Amino acid sequence: MGVSLSGMDRNPAVMKRRGYFAVGVLTTWNVLLYAVTGGRYIWLEGRVTGGVFRNWLRRFRYRPQRVARPASEQEIVELVKAGGQVRVFGAGHSFNSGIETTGTLISLDSYRGVVAKDLAKKQVTFKGGTRVREIAKTLLADGLAFASLPSHDAQSIAGILSTDVHGTGRDWGFVSELVTGLKLVDGNGIVHECVPGDELFAAAVGGIGAVGIIIEATVQAVDRFNVEQRVELSELPLVEANLGTLLQQHAHLSLYLFPFTDRCQLNTWQPTAKKQSFLGDFREAVTISFDALTAAWFAGLLAKTGLLPKVSRAAHRLKRGSNLVLESNRAYNRSIYHLHQELEFAIPYEDAMPVARRFLELYESMYSGDLPYTFVEVRFTPAGHERTLLGAGRDRHSVWLDLLCNDSHAFEQYYAAAEALMREIGARPHLGKYSRSITGADLAAALGPRYTRFLELKAQHDPAGKFDNDFTKRLLQQ
Image 1 (spheres, rainbow, N blue to C red):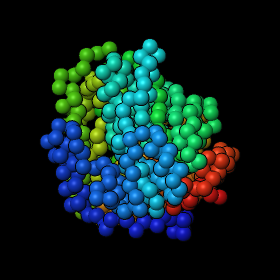
Image 2 (image 1 turned 135 degrees about the vertical axis):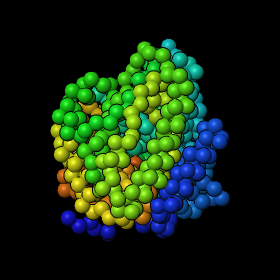
Image 3 (image 1 turned 90 degrees about the horizontal axis):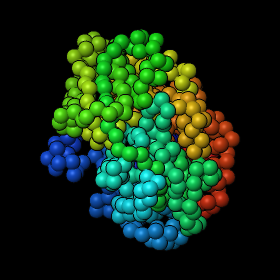
């Protein structure tokens, strides 16, 4: 199936082609900078410098007409009422052009921190720009924690909710399920307070900022706890045959599938009463850094030289597992060092492994020395998720396939073919990840009446299209 280019974003800011050495050098720089500053600074985060916005990958770079850093709710309301196009970013951790605007770009970096605490209920309200790592530290100081978290700690709470970010688990799936209320400024400049069950809440969660700006979120926390994190290498047919049992045995589970081998990585997380491992945080940081550098340099070199089919199985036999007991937030999420791209989508659980194999086989069939190193992360979310209209994990027991490519040239070729295959199988795209050819017609086919209802709410809460840009226009029209 071919891919039409007519619906693609116009991206005058996309950087020139990157090669193997750029991925290795920039990943190394990110690791070193984070280590030298004691975790206080990471280069790969979105920010505005000299009036120019750059997303975390430095792929999308442009100069908006105006950059605003509001520090109060009233300032945000006034910016929306002022007229013109408006888009918002927290961490800029996006793989698409959703943050681009011809008008005012609002940074929430000055709108972060605690609004209120109700420790008796274990509820804390945070401003929209507050990063996940800041929320985790704040909760920890009060003896609290998230019940679970996604894998990256730099994202803002507003950004996580706007793309309905998920983790992986038997009983738990989405950050939005840990939120008891939102405050939102819509395109009319009206401030709304909404709770789960409200249609506006469901439109805001996963709504890519198209119905309003999430300016506050109230988090339902739990008592702080430790997690036993295990990483094991196994044979994919064995894991596939026992997948249902493995999911029932572990509170949280994910898989890494690699091309040209049936070796796979099994990752599990289990809340535990065990004491934390000696130097656990340091050992985890070393492991994350090593994995990032290995993917960027060693795996990237194998892909570039055409050796991946011959060496992949032997190379993955060299990797060793680990077993650490960590504070829950340290186990569930981390800082991302590796310069990579992500294209992610949800499919029904029943189709998990056959479909995952199709995307691996697609990569293998296209493979040449020009195609960057790629692997597939497989995550799981339970049925019953009803807190979103556009979110891909709504209602059904879902498997999420995340195609992770080193961010060097030619990844677009694989992603174009993958998006065509996504369309063929009716997959639901994650709108915070790479999305170049997906259109409103695709979302309508995948989401049905919920998509239509979202458009009605969008027309009501942003009648002038203040939050529109090329990205939202392509996705939110039939």
